[in-house]
Length: 184
Picture (cartoon, rainbow, N blue to C red):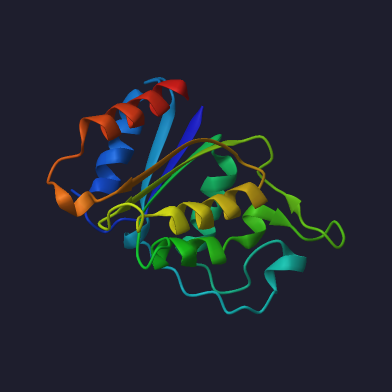
């Protein structure tokens, strides 16, 4: 199985990365795992031109968006981790998704787009410094909306609020992450 991890956190030792590492640790060692740090990619913002819809590929000059789009298409499992900013996903991750609309949906089939990743599995991780109830619900819902539009079956969600309250990942969150990894 090909696993693609999209880490949108710029903090290498933050909660988002810690949770993602716990999930990856639980995955079968025979699986092919690729980790992408989204904050290190060079991606121009979406121009909103809709040129990607008839062409099925972004018409902007090639950058990392098209490369990651191909990797998403090739992966059997997508694990998306994001810190929560203003109750939403990181802007770098949103930019990546905006530039890959046709990786997730095919608009050539008529008036309603067809999912392009039908039947694939996905996991969502959101980590927020804010405590419950002001944590990552908005981020989880935004990522979930995009992935489900693409046809993904969401097999695990971790929404960790209050990450600023402690230095280490709580055991309960680490165990849930490993359990999700083991189930994949």
